[in-house]
Length: 104
Image 1 (cartoon, rainbow, N blue to C red):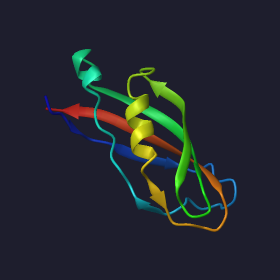
Image 2: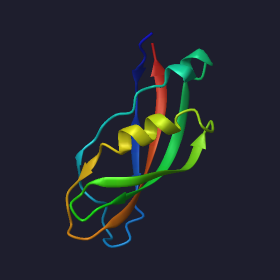
Image 3: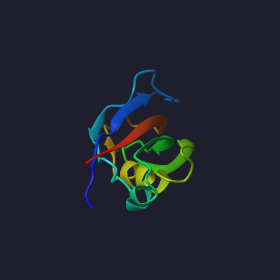
Image 4: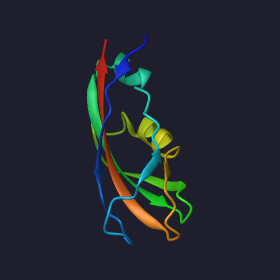
């Protein structure tokens, strides 16, 4: 069962250092969880907060809000952990909202 994902990436800044959104160099789209398909869940969203190191690497991805709860969390964390931002020389915090939608 393969489902194509439409992931709308809404970037909401929580930047603790810079006022502008950090520049994304690499985005990894989340995989639509097979468990969600088995439960006939075709859409949802996850808002996550992440730490961005001075060199642009992501760490400490934390789910802030999810709808439905605990369905898309792991997929969001796995994808966001692979993102890469332009290094600013200073650590930052950033928030992202991932929207999941299955299209067959």
